[in-house]
Image (cartoon, rainbow, N blue to C red; front, side, top):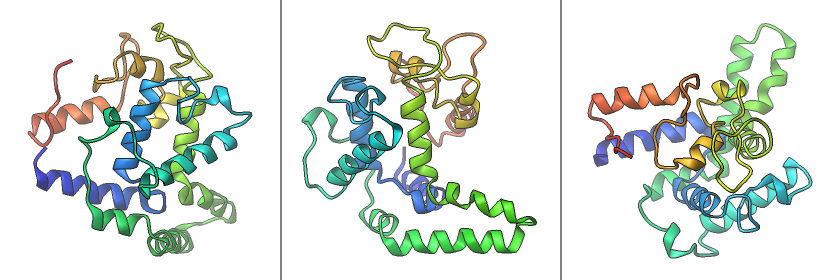
Length: 210
């Protein structure tokens, strides 16, 4: 991907994730570890080593912060080939940005919410990133069916997969981690894959053959 598009999507990431902004470098390291050590004691977020989802997410958050702040260094196999933009990372990980996003969400509800109960959805906006991670990492390795024997507990969690844009095809993804299409059966559908095909056709990204 050209530098222009890399920076473009970096800014899209900052704006779309808002108060839940995740540093791409730290996230990439955790994700690579998760695949390499899936459902073992070295897996940063396997639900099979925690009593509940809250314990799993707290442990994941602590490890993420250690990599974010360079307190620990990952194994060489998990380093490199991820985008970095220090200025945007500094903004996205600042409390000023998170508070500003939270105030924007509240202002949006004040302007457009028609009923009091709609304000109950505000915590979802504040914590969308951790919530998404909790659902994918907990449910994707506990509930559903498996197409492939990956020697782990990864599952495909339909029908909820459609709400998370293909992310809950965890069993398929762990079988073919480099495939852009998380669906492997004819009756499965990954909503993100067509979007990637369009971006590939527009020559914005390049999908590698796997």
